Image (cartoon, rainbow, N blue to C red):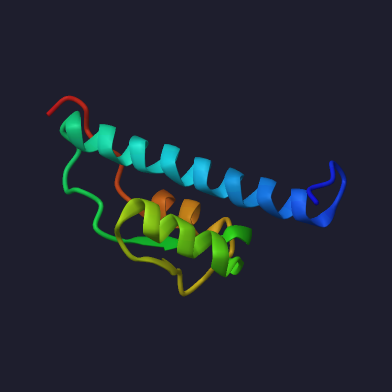
Length: 93
């Protein structure tokens, strides 16, 4: 039933890929917290193309165990622009 080039294979492959990426994302957030990053991530606002995919958003929320919601502005450059508005860290303090 699962053909190499068939629809079912592609669907299962993409679903597995989404789960793997979400697991790696969780490991990254967990490691940042273990290394002292504060505050711990309690919710995520997502943007870009992935924000348009409800299945991907649901998988991320389940794997991370926190709410994952579409940002008000889902343009991929919006988050980077917001970071650009922040004051740089003074590493001499």
